[in-house]
Structures are given as C-alpha cells and as structure tokens.
Image 1 (cartoon, rainbow, N blue to C red):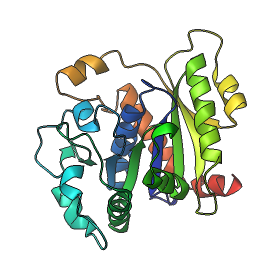
Image 2 (cartoon, one colour; image 1 turned 180 degrees about the vertical axis):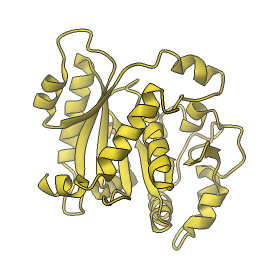
Image 3 (cartoon, rainbow, N blue to C red; image 1 turned 90 degrees about the vertical axis):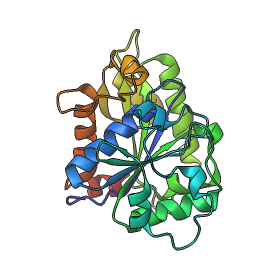
Length: 254
C-alpha cells in the first residue's frame, strides 16, 4: 500500500455513539480510492449493522450468515466477488434479519482470505466488553488500531478503557500503532492534549459532526464521503497517514 504496509486496520469505538462505524467506512473508502483495494468488515454484532448505516441492506450479495461454513482455504477473490458494494467498497456485514457473526474460526479464516487476496481489511469492532477471541486476534495482528472517541469527558473515559484493554493483549503478534480519532467539538474542557495525556495515545485526526448524516441514513443514502465532505476528507487523511512512507517507521517506534 504505497510504501507503507498497512493491510489490517481495526477500528474501535470508545463509547456508544462514538461514530466508529462511520469512521471505518470513511477509511475503507479512502483506502479504496488511494490503493484500489479495501474491504469493510463489520464485526460489531451488537451494533445496528453497517449495511443499514451505508444503505446497502437491499443490495445483493453474501453476508456473514451465508459464510457460516467458510473454513480453511477460502478463496478471497471469489469471496470479494460475492460481497455487496457500497460504491466501490466491498462490504461484509451481518444481515439486518440475522445480526450475528459466525464463529471465531470462520471470522479469522475469512479475514485471512481477504488479506491474501491483497485487500486492505478495515475491521469495525465492538467495544472491549464484547470482544470475541477473533476480535482479540485481529487486534493483536493489526497493522494499525484506531480508537474513535467523542471530544467529551465520557469519550475520554471510554478511550482510557479501550487503551487499557488493548494494553492487555499480546503484542508479540505484531500489533501496530494505536491512535485516536476525535469526533465533534469539545463542549467543555476536554481537548486533544488532555485525551492524549490520559490515554497515552496520539490523536491522528479530528472530524466535526456531520449534521446531515442522520437524515442521509434515514433516506438509505449512507454517509457522504465525496472529496469535499468531512468524512471524505477524513478518509483521505487517514489513508494517507497509514500508507505514507514513514508509516512503518512510526509503527516500529511504538
């Protein structure tokens, strides 16, 4: 991916309503535009389902329930061809009618197949209390982990909890650099420096609230990620940061 080697990015929300799924979608879109290969994988079984957020719930294609038997040497290219698309981005999500993900072995085999096919995998993961063995394995193997937090006291507290949970994972598997994306304006005294200080994580990017997002989702249009939109700019910024020539060196310093 450029001169960087990001292949697996895990995105975790610091608290409910942090907007992690929107950030994950923006990142997948940015990576797809920059690299030509990226897939968004929804692993937050307790969420509303990324297919609903993106407005692709009626698009034909395979969801997690159809992949319950996908084990072993899965063909990543065939899998990609079977997935629904959000624009140019392949999306693997739970079905709104069956909001569950398969077993850990299936999740890991499917993600491995997508990585072998040369795709950058953006995994939208739940908060620590709902991490499965598969989620922990993906976090431990990720090239980059992005924690999404609102610029609020609850957001900062949630980011602290996530950073502590991440610190408890095995790091010998090559877990990459963990950084923050802050959302919205700080309504009180919390600023980026404060959040960095209490979490020990660097702020990679900030993004304002998209007031039109809720209405767009209700209309089935999904987040706006054009070049001039907030999420579009965020996706491009994150993709550039994760694929820049210095990205690997930054990870090694962590």
